[in-house]
Amino acid sequence: MSAPAPAADRRRVIVVGGGLAGLAAAEALATRGLAVTLLEARPRFGGRAASSVDRKTGETVDNCQHVAMGCCTNFLAFCERTGIADDFVAEDELTWIDGEGRAYRQAAHAGTAPLHLAGSFAAFGFLPLADRLRLPFVLRRLAADGTGDKADDPFDAWIAGRQSETAVARFWNPVLVSALSESLDRITLRYARQVFVEGFLRHRDAWRVYVPTKPFDALYRDGVVPALARHGCDVRAGAGVDAVTATDDRVDGVRLRDGSTLPADDVVLAVPAPRVADLLPSELSDALPLDRLAAIEHAPISSVHLVYDRPLTDLRHAVLLDRTSQWVFNHTAISGPNGPHQPCRVSGEEPNGETRVTGPPTQRQPQGHDGGSHAYQVVISASRAERDAGNAALIDEVSEELTTLWPVGANRLAGRVVTEPRAVFSVTPGIDRLRPPQATDVPGLTLAGDWTATGWPATMEGSVRSGYLAAEAVLARAGRPEHVVAPDLPASPLSRWLFP
Image 1 (cartoon, rainbow, N blue to C red):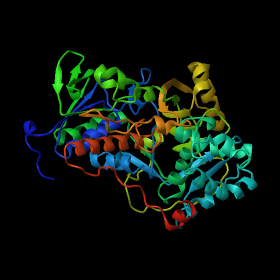
Image 2 (cartoon, rainbow, N blue to C red):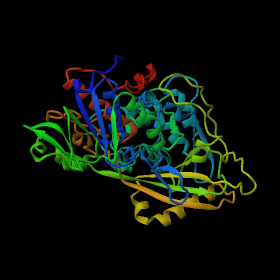
Image 3 (cartoon, rainbow, N blue to C red):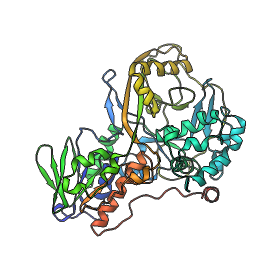
Image 4 (cartoon, rainbow, N blue to C red):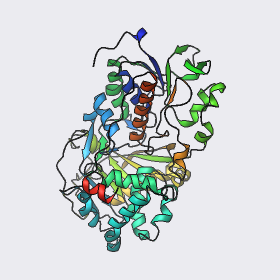
């Protein structure tokens, strides 16, 4: 790539918001030679994928455990471009633990998609045999109905009668609630289809989970922000924007909260949907579908952070069934010397795991207190009931679930709950009619955020895609049309036939 032109000769772009959508938009535009200024009101970057310091332990932890999957091609590409790819690890195996403590391993067999996971699903002994036998046919029906006239129907009514209540509670609910953070009655067939077809069945690497080995705060500070600066991006934290400014119905810059102004040829608003109306002058509001933005509903996610005086298990993470706890992450094992060591890559074949069903998880436990501390995070999606119950009760309940599952005599040293009340937008019927495109009818104004029209739910992938789509809109307006969004993983021939 050639050296950028002097700043005075380049198109000036201001990106408002330093979450993943804003960071992605800034990265895409700065690397293409535009003069980009990124403004974030808070002292930290990341938006909802951010970190905070635990006052009791002094540790920096992510507010909520975020993971990516192999199908998240744009997020993984963003990691590569900003130099943080090696700070994620790819998991070749997932562990499901039922209410009796029996563990079941999910891994890929050799062979093409979607048969690579057939052995795992067939060996899920926590499901009735009849449900396991019907599962391939139900998935194929979901693939068809999720793109047809029924795509906007609620999933709970659709699945009733096709699978037993046990299968819904132990398979469909954990997968969809973890992926979409909504109850099954508030999930449409279109997004349920996307989770299973795009995430599990389209490509043999699509289902693999990528887990960060560092807090996101460190990834931004040590990787993303320096990468943006190397490309000439002016990155400012603690720079709150009071309003977008305009002349003759055309955006021409922003006014900061300190009263100063910054001129721009383009402004990308990478902020939560409710903030768009707050930032726009009244003469521009009528040109945007602000009433539709106000109708977007949201769902909460709660994370329970627990610290013990000894390890509970050597598993790095596990899906927990029949409990309040949904997914537990062993932060000490993930980040410590016994953690995984396989770096994240956008493409390439990896060794395949072996599917098997086992008894209780293997435990290499010390006989006594090892003098250290061991951190765990339990994620509870769609946590409306848990949020209403209170933090102290939730900490006690989750801690009891973990120490009952792994009774090694561990003492809890610390615990806290972090709830993001508007963690994701809800994929309710009609949601796609509410999500606006990134390009707007207002000259000089572009939108970004996972809530915009990306075709994806509220995920890190959706955030990065929105930033790249916003960059495409800015480049097109500048007379430099370019495709920024990374392609999806290619579907195998068999998947294309089974799940068109």
